[in-house]
Length: 118
Image 1 (cartoon, rainbow, N blue to C red):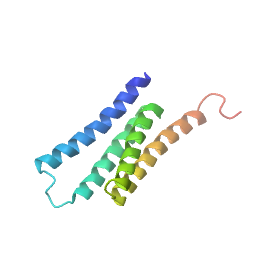
Image 2 (image 1 turned 30 degrees about the horizontal axis):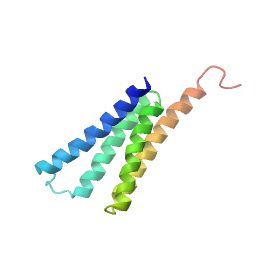
Image 3 (image 1 turned 90 degrees about the horizontal axis):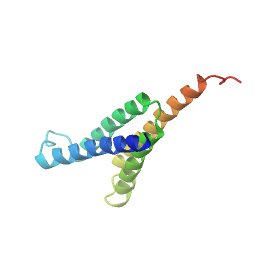
């Protein structure tokens, strides 16, 4: 089951990465928003989807970890290769949001498990 969630995480990441690349290559991004704005919007959309999947999967750490791993790579790339602090900060915030979603589900599960109040 672990590999299934890791694979699902990478499919989520690849879906957003490939969609962004296809939109850029096709020229569909030329509707008044900068490339940076599109990147931030795609990161936020990916974060919403990832947080929803984390909550539905009851805080699955393997899925969340895979998403966070990809987001950390985006942070590093945007701080080192072509410095873009806004994109780096957005990716970092989205990663924290995914971790928070996983932690809140895990915490709620522990709070309502049998013998939690002992």
